[in-house]
Image (cartoon, rainbow, N blue to C red; front, top):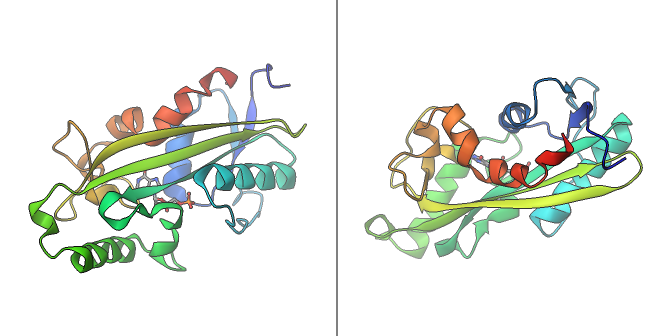
Length: 200
Ligand code: IMP
């Protein structure tokens, strides 16, 4: 089954930003479904790592929908904050997944650690784990990371989540300032996707 090209898939996420990006990575000829279309709520993310959570979601949505699923678990790791928010990246936005709130929390925490953090390079990286889960219970997981730093101010209107405060290495722009077509080619999700592209 694993060596048969995938023609139909459910994107295991209820996050519109992620769905948009994964949809863009997948070839055009694939029939794509979302949990929302099939009325499937998200499972609790009880895993301890990005990998565990992406597998948990892929398995859950594949079983519920009865089709192959691709799911992502991702987040931002900030060195000065000991790797936080990490797997809690979405949860820092509260129940309503409010990204402004999450970004405020990042700035507040950085201030608590070092009031002069803006004078330094605050290293951070985005991590993405992607899992494809087949209906015969076989699965494959891959991880992609992109290194960068935290922007001193929030910049840009594109993307979602922490995009306005993340500047990838070798760039002057935050992900929020980059046109999606550019971000989608270089980010953690694209890097993770390259490793499992052959299944499509
Ligand atoms: P989860 O994988 O559903 O637990 O959520 C991942 C969270 O990490 C998102 O809600 C965002 O806050 C953040 N995140 C993951 N990938 C990106 C990205 O590409 N840009 C901005 N934020 C991201």
